[in-house]
Image (cartoon, rainbow over all chains, first blue to last red; front, side):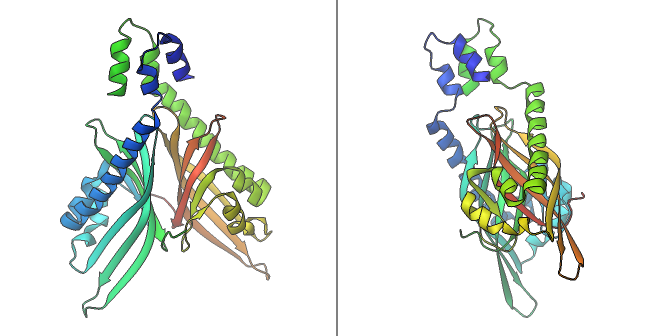
Length: 157
Length: 157
């Protein structure tokens, strides 16, 4: 409907409406950018711990952790994810796919996650999981996380 | 960038580009439509069991179940969710919020879920959870589920 009006006004044959309809090459570019953002999110967390993690969330972004209530906003997320700064704990992930809205303003990634915990005796426990992360393009053009949710079990289909 | 070009071509003052920028009233309308779709999804599942559930998924839509691999496509989802037709099992949910892309083509809902299982002796077990569902507007204008994921524990923030 929206682009129908636009098309009617632009029958003079300009490219503007083709652009507004988000041709697949543009959607593909948005998708690659989002996958890159998710990989950078993983690297920032590995390098910066909880501050790296928090830096990828939108101001009112929310985590939906397994077995706990929704955690919303930088301050609450920083508190809940403090274990990311423990040397015996690590969280890493790898996106397997993404999809982005036609205007490139909302999208999601999904993939596999890995938590590793080492206890005081040096025993390691590894938990594999899967996740879905929803991203929103910010005013400055960066992608930030608005919702992050995961659960147990690897995603292999 | 995209709407920048469009705006440049339409400085003759037409409304088209204002429309293409998706004013907040339109976004609000999309959001209400998506919340309504999620409530209708719940009712369809209560009334129609597994067929009601499957009918809300896009053809390649996927479930990310707790403790199991990703389940993709109608046939696999129908098989995995067969317990929805058992009289002793019920799954219901209620959305608490939604967000939709500016063009109204991709969005998500989130909320609380409730599973109820009754065993042969009539004992009931209730499990509360939370979920995030990602929806994509289809060619026919309907919203369908592309990703559904949940985990244990109520969402209360």
